[in-house]
Image (cartoon, rainbow, N blue to C red):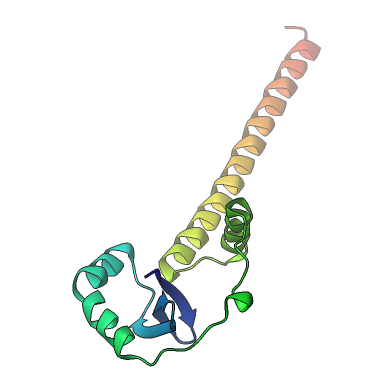
Length: 141
C-alpha cells in the first residue's frame, strides 16, 4: 500500500497529512505540529507519533478514487525548478535570520562610510603635501 506524508502550512499552523492508498480508495489522517517543524522534530515524530497517526488513518473511512482523476506525474526536474523558485521568492523565514540580515546591511553601510572618510582624508593629505612642495619650489629652496 503506497502512502505519503506531506507537511504544509495551513494558516496559522503547520500540518502533516498521511495518505494511504489501496485498491478500495484513500484513507487519511492529519497531525497538527504548530510551529514549523525542524528536521529533528520530524524525526522524533516519525519514531514516536507515526504509529498513532497510522492507526487513525486506518480507522478513517475510505474515500473512493477513480484512477482517471489522479494528477499526472510531473517531471522531477520541473518539480526541482518550481521548488527553487518558491524558495527564492520566499522572504527570510525567521526573525533571527531577518535580524542577521539587517545587522549585515548596517555594518556594510558603516564600513562603506568609513572607507569613504578614509579615502577623503588620504586625498586631502596628498593635496596638502603637493601644495607644500609647490610652495617650497616657488621659494627657491
